[in-house]
Length: 130
Image (cartoon, rainbow, N blue to C red):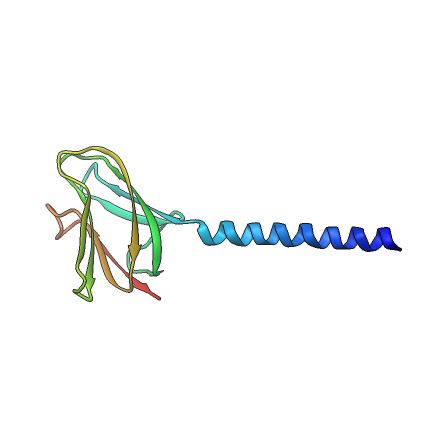
């Protein structure tokens, strides 16, 4: 009987450690958004392969990995509303081709990703909520 009790307690401890490790790894993971600009007059931002354009994301920390395929475009991320505190960042700049990744905390509001040179035709909007 004593050996059986020890085995049950040991099994419970192992299960608790596994669950604690799983919970910790999930809470510390950062979602990656993938952006692509160019080579033509196109720009996109996706989460798990699906466009975020017109969608709502949950506030939090995200990695944004951008593939810039044209040296005459750039990839800019901006929080438009509320206007303060203002956030605007050129993840890639005109004249650059290649990949760049940054980590950003998306706060609630209206957001836009765009090419600052061709914003009228190359943009996407999404919302962030708590």
